Figure 1 (cartoon, rainbow, N blue to C red):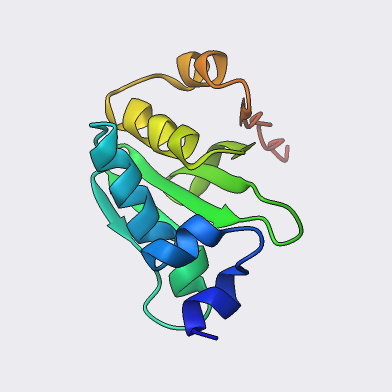
Figure 2: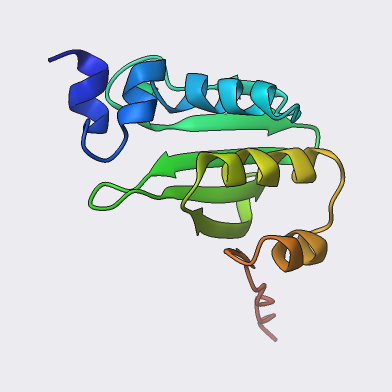
Length: 130
């Protein structure tokens, strides 16, 4: 069994195994649907090189991971290291569409309205000590 198939699990992600991991599958999906993901990277070592992807832009980073017990894609939109929105998609095309919309300037409110599986993270101001 190859490293990629043992890391991903052929049963849940046969399409990702075939493409060599999450990052290459995202790039291929975006190209097929003419979506702009920007720079797509994956960790260089370990299991995460097949199961994780980061899509970088001037607006922040879209981090994507895989569910381990069921097939789904975990998405975090991070700005300056802080999660602004997150969600779970069931289709790789949905992940690419979220990243493309974010790169195109879609606001968080518009993004969560368009992609119902995404949720804006609520901000709670830190209480000031008197």
